[in-house]
Length: 205
Image (cartoon, rainbow, N blue to C red; front, side, top):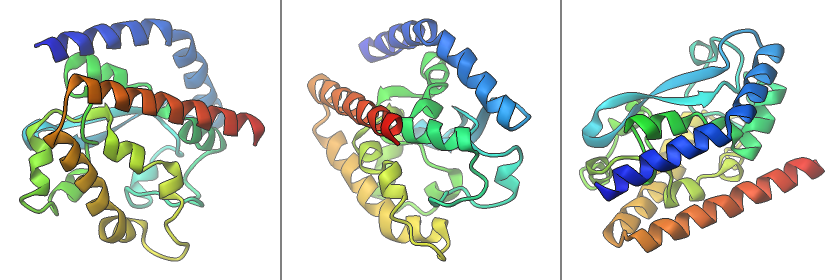
């Protein structure tokens, strides 16, 4: 109950404070690539119930019909604005709407694509017993830099499933075994530091 009340309070404050950034980002997305500024991808939530997780659109319209759900560093579907939004994590901000309605909590396992979840082992499915998070240890592990390790010339989805997913889920499972309010705060601080570094790097790029 306390976690849910905290999530609602954080979501309301974030959506109000960030509303000017939402307007500017939406305009930038649409000016480069006509269509909705938002993209809602289906994800598996608590107990495997699916929901739409919202992001700012970082690809051309209809990109999900042109390729897979994992993107490599040179994916031609990503727009110029989209690359900046991904690098700085600004594309993730609409997930505060998901936080407000209860699809997500602030800190928890990353919600995965439905196709990915179907491949979970029984142990990995333990991550579905809790509400997924906007951020979490597994998400900090799988940053844009981690995504950039996907070699050119391979299928990104296959590489992700075979080389990156198991470690990310192991980190989340370990975290859930020792989860406390203090550990959640530590993850939030790590996330803020990661975003700050990404913004600095983008400013100097």
